[in-house]
Each structure stands twice: as C-alpha cells, then as structure tokens.
Image (cartoon, rainbow, N blue to C red; front, side):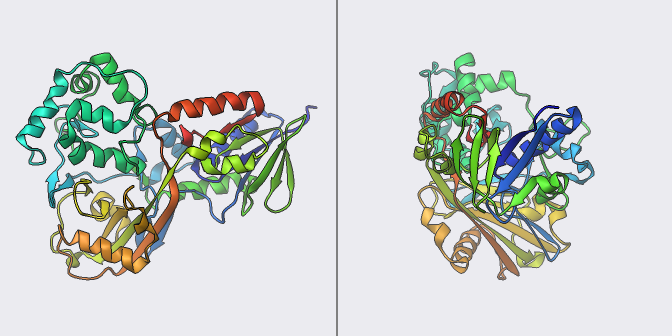
Length: 442
C-alpha cells in the first residue's frame, strides 16, 4: 500500500477553502493516498468575504457578489448544493458623480470605454472638447508594446477628461489603486490586446463584444452579478461544514524548512507538520517571512498595498427624501468627496433589507486619502453622511452603522507585476518543488 502523502494549505480565505474542497473531492473520488490539512491563522474563515446578519439586514462587509459569467464560482455554488440560494442583483441606472452632480453612466460602454457613440455625445459628463478628444481613438495608431500603466494607456487613447471623469473611477475602484501606477498587463490585459489587434479600442470592442445595454425583445434586463440569499458568507460556512476536520482555525504558519523529503512546517501552536506539498493562499506579504531561509519571495516585499473601509448604514425608508432610482454611483477623483463609491443596497439587493427599510453602503480610502481608514467610527460616519447629503436628502441619523476596515488588504499590481510573479514562479519550481501559491497574486 502506498504511503500517504500530506498536503498543507495555508490560508482560509475563499482561495484556500476552494483549493481544499477540490483536492479533497479528487482524493475521495479516485481513492488517492493523500491527506490534506488547511490552517487559518485568524479566528474566522472567508478572508474578505464577511457577512453580518442583523435585524433582518444582510450586510456584506467585503465583496457583495461575484460575476454570473464566472463559471468556476457558479460551479462551486452548485456543487455545494446552494443553487436554490442564488440571487441576481436588481438592475437599474448607475451613476457617476462629476462636478458635484450625479450623471447617468452612458449606456453602451465597457468599463467606461464607448461601444456606442451616441450616448456619449449626449452625456453631460464631458465637454465638447473632451468628446472630440475621446473620439480620436478611432484614428490613433497602436501604442508601444509591453507593460505600461493603465493611466498612460487610456490617457493616450482618450485624453484626460474621459479617463478622469469615467474610466478612472470605474477601474481604480476594483483594485483600490492609482491607475497611473497600475499595470495594464496585470489588471486589464484585454484592453492591451484589443489595441494591438484592432488598433482602436472602440472598434475592437464593437467587433468582439455584443451590445448588452438593451434587453432582448420581450425580456427584462438581467442582473450580471450573483449573491446568496443569506449573504456570501453562506458559501464559506458550507465549505467549512463539508471540509470538517480538514480545517483548523487560529493556527498559522510561522516558518517553513525544506527537507530532503518535503517540508517541515512550524505552526503557531508549536506543532510541526510534515508536508510533501503546500498550497500558499495567504497575503503576499506573509510569504517572505514564512520562507525566510529562501529569497524566492523577495519580489513580494516590494508589492505595495492600500487600505479601504466600507460603511453600511441602515435607515427607515422615510428618512431618505431623495431616494434616487438606481443602484449606486462612483465618484470622479476630481471631486472633493472623500467617499469613492456608494451602493444603494436596498435597490441592488432587495432581499438584503427588511420591508420599509433602506441600506446604503459607501467606501472611503482612495490612494491619496489613506488616513481616513484610521479615523474613529463616528468620524468616518460623519464624513460619509456629509458627502451623501450633497446628493441625497437624508433627514435622520442611521439606525445603526457597520464599519469595516481592510488594512493593507488591497495589493497593488504596479507596472512590471506580471514579470515579477513569473520570476517568482520560475524560482519556486527550482527551489521549492511542490509549493504553489494562490491565484490572487496574478
């Protein structure tokens, strides 16, 4: 009989949990001689997925959904028997705040890049000169090859106005970063490929993407995001239940030593786990310390990270005198607002709010305003309320607020990121066979 091989998974976020689930499934189905163990240094699982259920509200303190077109996510939900709990987001108009005024985001665009020209021509977000400059994308030649910042790429193609008033708020919000430092190859390589293949981004998007701005005849426009009826953490809870004794909370990896056969892993509880292989699903900045006797992960020391906070505030519906018909808005960085985005959760996720109530969720912590994350709960709430009341008339204080701080939790994929990651992977194959790290670095 074959000797049992041991696999250690470090990190109990969704990456580590999914890895453990599929490894265990493979082992069980094929009767493989493997044993897996997942350790999580913190007291809870899920990483950035965190749901608070309070007074009938379902409040997401991290992400509130995943894209319905992302097949691996949908597959995992179905395999775990949660298909009947899938809910799509409510649809509605999205806005962008420019010059202290909410404007409808033009239809017929992809991440702020026009596919249809007419909605942009009639939009009040841009000046006539800004519209003319953006249209030059249709005539401009291809740019240089190789990695470059998102900011330089889009400014060259569309000019500053379209970038700062629309593209930048949409793109930087995803990574909580500065587009003038973010790598196009690591974040949106599809835009780079479109330019290289079609010369014009507008033409490339028209040729490769259907216009989904209008529903099919006779049908209602369908939401493109999925969540779960009782919050995204339901997925984490089901994974923990299925994995059972495989998972250990409150146990982290302190140090890894390479041996002639496999690795000796010193855990924070004093135990030594002898692993034949390892899956590292921890934040990037923890790896150099865990593998301190190697220089394989030194490139990760130079990857910066930003902090954000989100503020969820519950109200009686009657308190919001100007409850705009839409799902939320993002904020142009040219504004003097400190919030970067706002979701009207009671419109986007009606299942998450009791009847007659409203839930508003805002983000603070843009790259130039990191100190706001360290303010007190009362100070952050006051900042958010002041900004909201510039566009919405909210007469009462929140019934309650839930503030979530994510300190240094958003790694920044700066120019050269893909090359750095590729170098780390190559060095790992040579020096640390059997060790892999999660896809969150890519």
